[in-house]
Image (cartoon, rainbow, N blue to C red; front, top):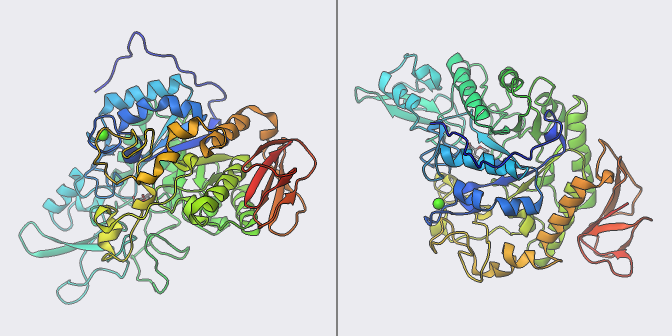
Length: 536
Ligand code: GLC
Ligand code: CA
């Protein structure tokens, strides 16, 4: 279905060098289920995002990243896609998406979306055909089917675990009713891995890329961009360090060399749409190997998760920054920064929780936004939301079931955003029955109450984003480090902005200059414990 532009369609305010807008952009990650619900079913949707565009403009972000909104049975909340070229009815339809793109562009905000090329949903028509057609069929070859081991094939083909717990293989029943082959799923059993050696798989992704780019999408976040390619022969591995939801660099399920040819193929298509970009989710720690993903003919950007994994400690944060810069420097790539996303604990909680966690998260926001490159803000980070300890009965992440109730999973960072009012659902929905419960204690954290408060975390983010967008000092590709006392650091952006972080328990002297912004009130000109400041 296509939508003809309305007569009164707003004009796009997207300007600037179309080829590189992403290189210093601030992206805002919308987790659609949790952002804003427009139809009262307790689950956020695209209509809700449209309703809140005014807020996003006020906040001052350059682009949105929408976690998956394509058709999906929602076994992994949209990361199990059954039709990559349609919108799931839970979130709206193609017309809603078209409207979101037009309305966001009218406010000068670009729209990027998640793509999930490593796997499909088990409800995808391809997977159904593969099940129906039997071993050796061309439809089965689109996935990774193998005979089992052992005399009757009752053992999985290798010893790989799923990232969510349990084995990475599920045995099927063949069309004739006999116990059959096994298929590989690195994630949930509802997410069968595609066989990227089969050219039909890339051809279909190309169709999907073009489909959304033609509709005006400005780019993609590529899910599990270090996945897709699998090692020859799918060898067993020594898993003595396997942790759920994590992977090491020697993990055979990820980061296989053939993945780079896939990224080159994606880039060739993207190059036909010079306004658009792709950022990959890359859980690779070795800098040399990380950098390979952002070579000039591969991804435009790669998520570097070091800041999201680092404790609130000046030396550790500095090491994470240096590492992240280093990871892209040798290939001439652009650094990226993120403190959290829908898969990890929120920073407020990671830094200790409570008022101190908030204070530290505010400091780290100033560090993140002072750095050169692209920054990613996860919805709710700008409100200083903490992780939530949800009751067992509320948990929805597949990890909870698949780990046999030992891993609580990621729901704690996915609680809906509180907008206004003094009790749940805080304007997120008209239904009190939201998909995850919102804590009643969040009254002071709503957008409404923080907008009115100049000292709120939201006001701090707004001020930082405004300066970052408008001050020449907040520019330039490099940073220089200052000599600093233990537990502190200072760096100077080549444009002139100075950012100082104090992770000690005591106030420190600031270097000479004018303070533009501080994450906590200065006392007698000193920068207090657990805080950061911007100076010129
Ligand atoms: C990525 C997503 C995560 C999802 C997984 C499987 O890691 O960020 O949320 O569960 O891929 O698609
Ligand atoms: Ca809804």
